[in-house]
Length: 352
Ligand code: NAI
Ligand code: MG
Image 1 (cartoon, rainbow, N blue to C red):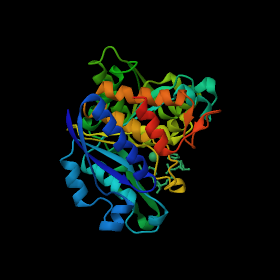
Image 2 (image 1 turned 45 degrees about the horizontal axis):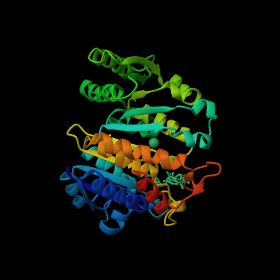
Image 3 (image 1 turned 90 degrees about the vertical axis):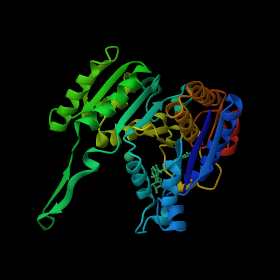
Image 4 (image 1 turned 60 degrees about the horizontal axis):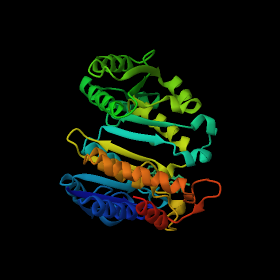
């Protein structure tokens, strides 16, 4: 298979973990006989410094002709007070490529159970996937403005039938590849948009008789996520609820450094990135955890290229390395040997 990938390293630890992605792609290509070419472009703070634009046209054009996009992370204290912010590049690229489906798996590897802030007995066996709608709802609805000279304010939550249906379908398809248990999260006791969401989930569910579906109110789901995370398989929800629940779920593993994500569009183009930020506090020290980035490469192989075996091999290698007693500085695993970014990358690749 021949694929062209645009890599957007970004800021802080972004370039360090993107090196790990490049190494991994090279190794997977050699082992499984694929030709992956990767071309690096600017996004975020570095793009502001060089082009005065967090998402330059050159980057957009390169992504348009790519088979998939890998992103490191953007942002940092250098640009906190600047008028143009690195994070604008992220919102812009999601919107430009209509990346409406955000998939965030949260898997607790056995060896990571002890590093969770939750009790081991609670997190044991947790393996869930949050499917979040990413380009609609409250974050994009108009009007969104101050009124009456600042005495009132309005934000708007809008969805079309089609916008809800396409994300719900992705969630059902995802559930079919997993334990076939879908939890749709809403606030149907209060919001009309949630009542329509429920209706659509019920309608689409008729096409997926094997999937067990349940509806859960967002407040109840938020509690269950930390009291009984292993209860969940696939969670599907709208943009705002998904933003909050996915951050809540990410603490289950004890480190942001191990979690990947995918953002998919209807035409198949996907953007894959670790969920963490640019970690300016540890940038340049070669201690960042490359696992979130490397598992994001795994998601790219699976979701954009259909390479399930290769993707599974990456997950297995990560699990193996952790189980063998190796870790990076951010992970609390008793007795494990702490490796640098480059060493961890090499170790995972050697386990492929
Ligand atoms: P952060 O995720 O960058 O860091 C939070 C904490 O986790 C820090 O102590 C950091 O050292 C640690 N950490 C994160 N990733 C790690 C890794 N791979 N290995 C080891 N430790 C890791 O979040 P923070 O500090 O709130 O934000 C820093 C910058 O990143 C900000 O400018 C923020 O806007 C941006 N950001 C960008 C995101 C993106 O590019 N998708 C997402 C979240 C934040
Ligand atoms: Mg968030």
